[in-house]
Length: 357
Image (cartoon, rainbow, N blue to C red; front, side, top):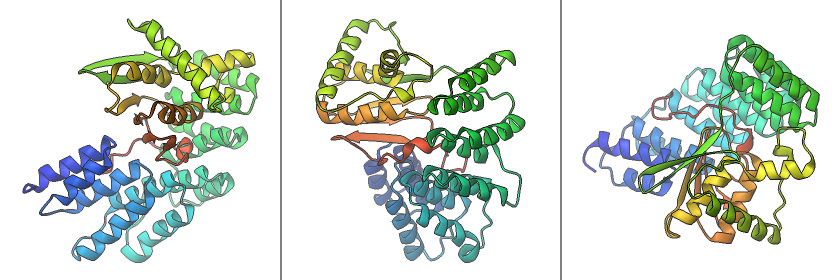
């Protein structure tokens, strides 16, 4: 690849599409590379939670390019990779090295990565203490990372503190109310969950509708939870029923804790089974040839039950499934996901590692 700008754009594009092998291929084909090229490769590893490979690329950059000096974006990539891989010790070491070794002052985005890293590991008190000792006022991403961790680890008390700070910083974002409500729901505190949802309506906020979409033959097909509007609806739901039967025979049990309403147990299982990404996957299975990976995009985070179900489905159907939610990529193959199940605490926005946005 003779043009450094074109080559870097390819590395960045493939990394953001979850095609890390193609990103590596484009990177190695380049005659010249700059810092943005390296950041794009490291960022591609970060999106997949490949912390060891991200650090290896970083070290290779330093050893092979003496004039290459890492910048703020480089460390966002590295810390995000550690966060998504659940590697607390490595992430803390990298964070400490920013000032000590590279004279780079960590910014809010780096602190947000550390809060997410600690929260993912269940170290909620340590994450809160880390926030309290920051040299600046915590940002929306920082409190959001703590709130997301509290939802997963079922600590609605600390979640309430994070949420109240978010309400002050961004009172018009209904998503913060939803996460708090979900935190109460996950802890089985249905009255408080309902109260928060009522508050959303009382102050006139509108909750974003979750959906998943998939492209087949250049046509985008969009699905919502419990969707029955598609022209191939009968085949889609027949496929879902077949999958559910095969998965249960293989040992899968739906997790009703991911139902966000106080329903009977059977109703919770039914609701969880009809999440939008499962419907999109069923459509993909009947529409996309077996040799082609199924790619699904979701505007919210993927729930734990869908993540578990997709692992079963990838093994049963022998299909490669790639899901891009609003935080990262999940690549399912042979009953495993490349995120190694560390994905569910991520509350950070989707970082554009090439620009830092």
